[in-house]
Image (cartoon, rainbow, N blue to C red; front, side, top):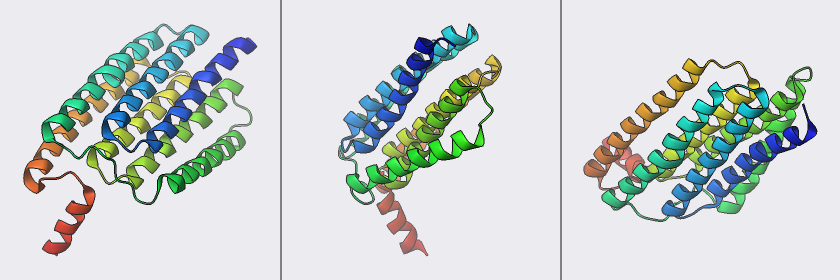
Length: 220
């Protein structure tokens, strides 16, 4: 592969990891949703570039689906949900932002060490894309664990799915039907999560996971 193609692919994959750190840093819901849309847009650029480099036209369809669903529809729908439910605009975290960022740096280092050592004979672009993808997945998991607001946990879940798409396109060979199935599975999951958010808000008058834990403690 031409070195320029290699460098641009790394630029987009590394940008996805950088935007994942920006997600961890956000303490406002609307800013969090905007950064999530940015992450989806970087993913679109990465997938489109992989389509060009690999000469795989079906990946352009994957990029188009990601652009419509992940960068436009889902962030827009989450904005509407936050506005309609009147959810508190600040994102409360378990521990401080600083400790969360340090944990994120550790997870990225772990991803690089594990993936690069586990795939010594693989294609250089694929193995490094997989390392970046694992980093995005782990940072998404970290967001789900360290956020108390249900909407921010949904964003963490969607970020994990972005990492899986990056892994699927970087590893090559994923059939188009599988990519489309994953995209629509995520859309269905998002709809179900949205319904649950409305129901939880109606029942408990909040989407803060601490309030739900307190209610569970009172019941037991």
